[in-house]
Image 1 (cartoon, helix red, strand yellow):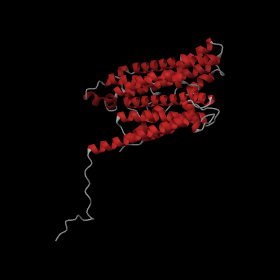
Image 2 (tube, one colour):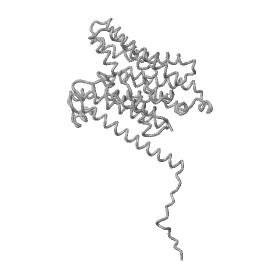
Image 3 (spheres, one colour):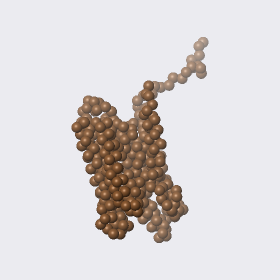
Image 4 (cartoon, one colour):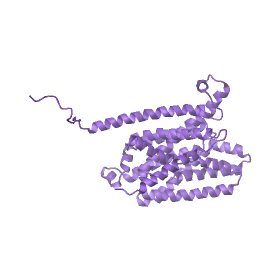
Length: 366
């Protein structure tokens, strides 16, 4: 009589994997990634408050945050470290989201805010303003402090927006094609960078220190006033980015696909670039051109959560905040009491990633 029990040698039948299963697994993975990034950001923020030229114990940080510490610890945390750390996180978010938008719109994995000249335009406007302040005021330190607190963010923002407008105008006849945008941006950015160096050299040897520190990207001396200047732009930029989710998902592909699905490719490409410029220029206005965050973070985000645009933006925003906050913490503690420009550290991270991407792009595809 044949046995009714299945043989242990027979392969077990597995239920087929459906689209719902794949979507569920991706959602679970995305949730875990977000939880991990939130925990990492909170832990890093705590470390940034603890370490510096004057290291603190955890209970001293807690006492300082709750107002129960001594006057030195309270002042150290609330006047110096907390506003600087929060600003570093917000600045990193700006650069990362701006890079994600530009890489989708220009369809170039090497795109970042510097590609369309935003960094160079903002830098030129800031350097010119510092030079004018130096010519008008006799006390350089007082003049620089006054300028950085009032007019420098607006000057840098205006320079970035004006440069982006020039690049868009040069590419307008070519229907804002991605290749034309990138080429015009590189050319205009190189020209403006040369002008910045010319202005710095003409300005004078000893007085160029302020401009060079700002051009290297630094959060030294930033406080809650700088954060308050930046936050309205953060709200506007993130709200605009959420409204662009569907256009951004389609702009990543060939223009014909978007047009076939009823998308006005030229109009939405222009709007997306404007949002990216606003995010990057506002961040540059308070921290200088911190390079490669907008280039590196989008690639890390794709490795973590794939190509879904909403998940990319959420993951990229957290990752950009973590990367910039970590770089700033290391920059002000590695050789304490001296400080390194945070832009120098992000460049050290970004250059190897840039070369890896170039090598990957150069490989012949099967």
